[in-house]
Length: 405
Image 1 (cartoon, rainbow, N blue to C red):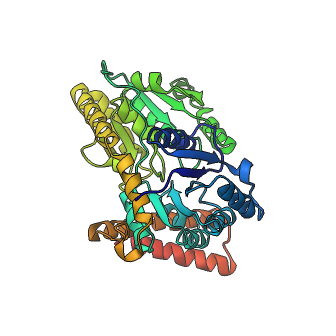
Image 2 (image 1 turned 120 degrees about the vertical axis):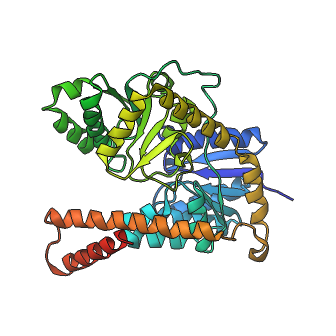
Image 3 (image 1 turned 90 degrees about the vertical axis):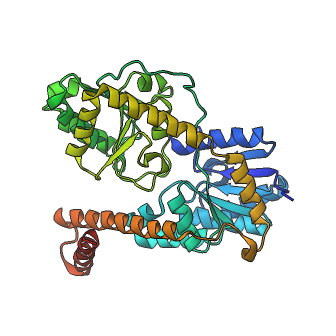
């Protein structure tokens, strides 16, 4: 029998725009609707040093918490303190993994390995893709894929026409690659001169400066690109665009794609084949990572074929409706029930062979991305000499070999 009622959810920060804060709001509402008693904590409540553990343990005991769902899973000290505190208080703890497992390895293996070692001491992992679910099961963790789905804000909306307007949503950061969106629009406008780009989001000053430099000598292009900053109500922009564009290197389960599909927008995206929302037949087309020309060609193709653009938009809307029908309550209750079983009886440790193969393919792909980043640093003159340079050059060679597999 499920005895979980009081659930503590831990975040780095809440109350700001972005994917994880959005998840916090959605999950709190769902748990309340289902009869649970959720409570939310952030770094400002718990701290970030070694006193965090005792502080959290005290809170868990005093409030008689039954389960912790940990969303702040990227800092070794905080994560280890939170897991230790939960276990000391006799409370089960589940890590909600918002990223892609192989992104961590690509960006820095030692740190990633340490974080994953700590995650293995938690009671289970909630994954945002079937690929991550399989990875954590391979690591010996109970894991379950549970997508985060926005409520339908555009039910009954019917798109009237497909204007030559592209919309890009996200934080202006290196991983999102907004400059690529600008370059893609430059190529699109060579064929579709009236095409425009809406960029919704704010972010890192160096990234914004890089875009500004690129546009400084391109006045016509600059006039066609509209930077809207942080926009809370994105629906009007989605409803008046013709194509959604995604240029991220990695994503966990982006609300931007959910929102595009909610608005019946066909999506052109850099390849992220592990994402459920980008599968073939779902109103999305994937092009190779960094292939500006291929992305532009797909947008031009959609703009040139009104009927195909509408068809892909309808497929996008249908795919949103399909995944929004996912039984989230049933999944969470399945997870909660499984936490009380011994490992030998757990259904959250078995691995489908095809899913395991996909894990290795995604890991290899992202490892190559990490190796290529090392090559870029070497080319820039960072660590050309000595042991670090030798290791870097060796890893580049390995990466090239993986590329040919």
